[in-house]
Image (cartoon, helix red, strand yellow):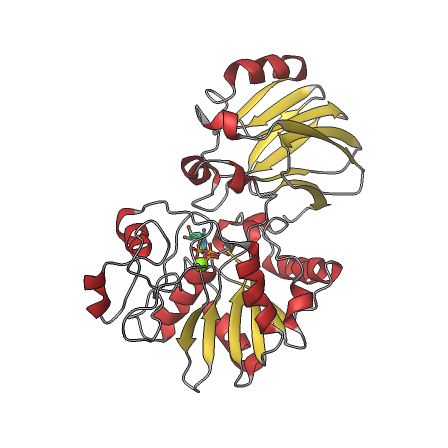
Length: 376
Ligand SMILES: Nc1nc2c(ncn2[C@@H]2O[C@H](COP(=O)(O)OP(=O)(O)OP(=O)(O)O)[C@@H](O)[C@H]2O)c(=O)[nH]1
Ligand SMILES: [Mg+2]
């Protein structure tokens, strides 16, 4: 990676994204005009534009860059705070973390709790997260639910961090877009100097390098760039469409009483066929404004062929061509009580699990599908 060292000899890093500042190539990350170097807080042009013009500026983070940062953590004496997105727990799980953290304790944080439906039992969610973590080989010292955006659970988070870190550094890690930088800004805003603001955006790949924030005891809090989990549907659509499928407020579940041989289209991104089973409710948890289309299974092929990208949108227009072809996941749901069918990045559908059912889920190839005990 070509990083331009500016004339003082000391490398300056962008306060927004962590990238090494360079003044040579405006098309590369970290660029800032020479005149801006005199400012007390230096930010790159990309961060400036994201912040002031809401611009989309994706930069392909190399997985190697990311792994280099993670790898370094094992050799430090620190507390690792791993953040997941509660709206997409499966998709936002940072795989392979146990290999990197060494002996350091891990605090698991479920962010975006503000999106979960009102009737959800948060204690159950916490227990469920502990359990899921264990299944994935991670033993967090504790689990905390927060909303970085709305400022929920931050006091509790800070008291846990305080207790667990015992004068160690703190690393905030996680998949891209889970809200790591928003969380740090919230902490800085509520408890520290409000001067510093890390760049955040609705699009993945915002933070580009480690960002160091001094703590009172001479230790540091580090923001890190998120790695991309490629099975999240958000990486297969345009930034405009990503906005439409990302919930912006608490999810209001929508109930569809279905007979077998009926189909639900979740916009143009998923097709859910109720192939076999008793008449029953399908409760859909997706972004509130996402268009859901109900039809007969026998008509589903035709409707998809004629309306994909128009009525069934997003994806919109040309973006249809960019989407990987759909593949079918045939799911057998047992009579084992409430069950969720999860479509990574899009949401989930709850069945009561009173009777067995066969459900075919069609999604763009590569999108993660999972069946879990119902969250709500
Ligand atoms: N609803 C909701 N959205 C949130 C919350 N926290 C963050 N977000 C949104 O999630 C998106 C990503 O936030 P960032 O803080 O940039 O995420 P990040 O994990 O730092 O992402 P990278 O830097 O790409 O790794 C932004 O649109 C945030 O506004 C939250 O508590 N609730
Ligand atoms: Mg970030």
